[in-house]
Image (cartoon, rainbow, N blue to C red; front, side, top):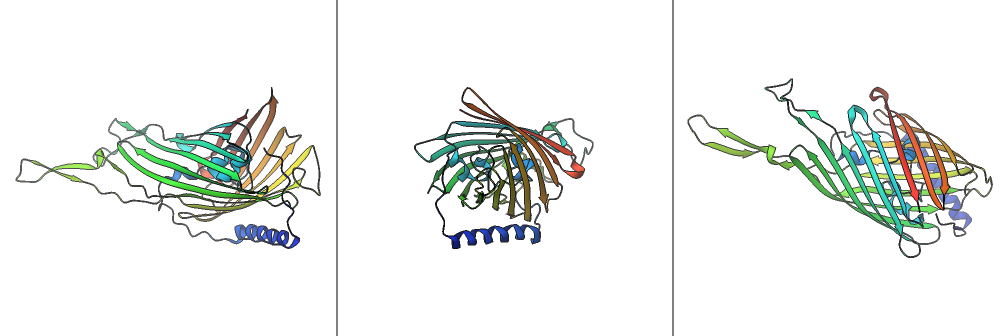
Length: 348
C-alpha cells in the first residue's frame, strides 16, 4: 500500500466532513426499509466476496488497498502497489457454493488494474413437475457468473477513483440470462484522526431476461395431427443496483495522529446501503489488529432478513518479501444457520 500524507485540509472542510460522517451513520440507524424483494435478478451479486468484510457486518466503504475492493469499491485498488491475488470460498446455506478470484497489478505510478471473477453454483437440484411432484429422476443446476475488469487511480494524494465493467450471466438448466454492468467508486483519505470515507454505486447495467430451449412448447390441437410450436415469454428484470456510503475510523493506531500506537490498531466502520430491491440497510464493524499480524473482528447487519451478527479472525505474515493474509468469518444467518467463509490474499 502507498504510504501517503493526505493534503492539509482547511478546518472548515474538516468540520464539514465530520458532520457528513455523523449524518451518514445516523441515517443508518434511523433509516426505514421499503423492501421490494424479488424485483431484481442476479442476487448473487449481493453476497460478500471476502471473509474480512463478512466478519465486519458487510461494511467495506472505508476500506482500501485490498483485492476485495474489486467487488465493493473499485477505487480501493489504487492503493495496491504490488501484484496481488485473493481467493475466497464459502458454502452458503442448502449447499450453495460461492467463489471469488481477484487479481490486481500496478500500471505506472498511482494506477492499478484488476480482474475479478465470481462464481455461484447451486449444486444438484431435483427436477419436479406438476405431473411428478416427487421428482422425475432428473437433476439440474443453477450457475451464476460475473467477470469484471477494473481500473483505478489516485486523482490526488488523498483521493482515489475507480470503475469496473463486468459481464453477468445466469444459467438455469438450459436457460440463460446475460447483462453488462458498471461499478464506480471513490475513497477519500481525510487526514482527520484516521478517518476514511468511501462511496460506490454497483451493478448499473442492462436488464436480464431468461431465454432457452426449455421455454419452447409443442402442442397438439384437438382435430389436428400436426404439432404447433409456441414459446413462453419471460420478463426482463434489472440487476440489484446498490449505493453504498461509509466511513472507517482508526480510533487507535493506524493513521490516527492523536492516538498513536505501533502495536495496536482499532478501527470502527459504519456503512449506509441503499438497494433497489431491499430498501435501506446498515452495516457496522469493529476490527482490532495486533502488531500488524493478528486481527479480531465483530460485525452487525442491520435491516437484513436473516444475517445479524458476524465474527472473524485474521492472520498476516511476510515470507521472503511476500505478504500473506488469511481471513476467516463466521456469519449467523439465524434460521439458515451459520456460514463459514475463508479468504487467502497474497501480495508479491
